[in-house]
Structures are given as structure tokens and as C-alpha cells.
Image (tube, rainbow, N blue to C red):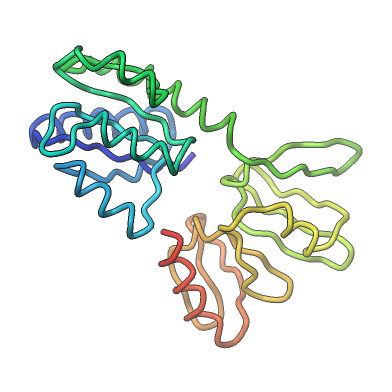
Length: 233
């Protein structure tokens, strides 16, 4: 799975140490972690205004003008799904953490195995709340996480769903499938929906995805796709 993870801590040494642990957790668990590091709550909020939405947030508590608990309360107003983890040298704020549904508190210095266990819980929580596509094929039904779908292709009265684990062929229309997806899926051509999460390159005639697939796009669509990606990420 791909996760966007932010670390907010005014200590550069602590930030780099935790970032190294997160990268090792992701590598060992087979995940991809896009890490963003911030030295203050204010810097994080500024990035949020530019459209950066995080899956997990690892917060120090004692920082500058705005502490980690205050940041968490502000963030919870707009994002109920983000997994909040406090990493601190001060246990005095633990009671306040329950107000923002913090996943856990870890005391500095963080033990690698304890952080890995909490990150596993965060990943499991995200998987439970993630939207799925109900795919019916060969007299069976699977629920495929939207984040695992690279693109969808119309084939006459069927759609072919290209996912991370395999391809699914379902009797339905592209329009009906599009209605069941989220805002990250973009119709780049009459017969194709592409998951913008996985676009790594835009060409005049196609987009290239992280798995190497090339999905055709309509003439003049490249610039519009670029704007859509900037807006969402």
C-alpha cells in the first residue's frame, strides 16, 4: 500500500531518527511511504492549504507557538480518517489526546519495534475505512480497495479493472463503474478511467503509471490531467 506520512517535530535529530524508522517499517512491510517532514505545526498547516492530505501524522507535543495537541484538534475538524500518533518526551498531555482520537502515545526515545507495531495498527485502521469497489465476476464477488486499482478499461458490455493483484472483468458500463469510484479516478479517454494516485508521467498520447502501464488519453487531455493532479496532490 502507498501511504502519505507526515512527521511534525521541532527537533531535527528526532525527526530524522523517526523518519528512518518509518522508512524501515515501510520497507519491511512492503509498503510505500511518501514522507513529509515539518519543523512546526504552522509549517504543516501551510502545506495542508496547498492540498497535501496525509494518511498518518506523527506529532511531537512540545513545539513552538502551536503544540502538537492543538494541531491535532485543528486537523480533526477537517479530517477524521488520519491516524494520529504522538511521540513525545512529556506524558502530561495524554488525557487531551483522547479528544482527538489519537492512536497511541510513544515516549522518546522511540523503540523501533513499538513504533512498527503502532504503524501496523494505523495501516489496518486505514484499510478498514478505505472505500472499496464491489466487483462481481465468475459467480463471485470481491471488494477491491480503490487505492489498489490502477485504471479501468471499457470493453463493449464489460469493464476490465486493472488492480495491483490481478485484473477483474465485470459486466457493467464504464459510467456505472465511475459512479462507484472516488475523486482520484479521471476519465482520460472515452474508454479509460485512470487512478491519478499512480500517474508518474504524462505524454501527449498517454499517461504512464507506477507499474509501467501506459493508458491512452484523448487529444489535448495532457494539460488537463496535469492540472487535476496538482489540484488533488
